[in-house]
Image (cartoon, rainbow, N blue to C red; front, side):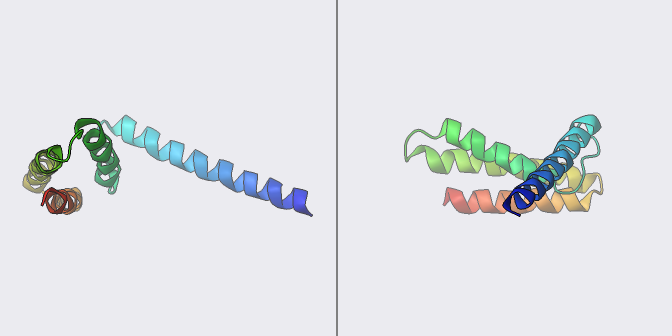
Length: 103
């Protein structure tokens, strides 16, 4: 019985990884012109990675968080002008959190 449970767990893991791979490929295929809802939140991980790379001292935190927030707000306004409310909302949400982190 334990072997069957491990096999089922492995199958589920493979299925999840395939779904994730498909989502990533679709995002790359779309090239950002028509990214699916939620892609902005995935980009939030890139923001976090960039912040980690640029923050070396305590005094860097406010400046770098503000810089990332301004960038997200600019993206949100572009989406809003295009009439794409979902990605605009996601980017405003991320910008608000970044501004809060800057304080």
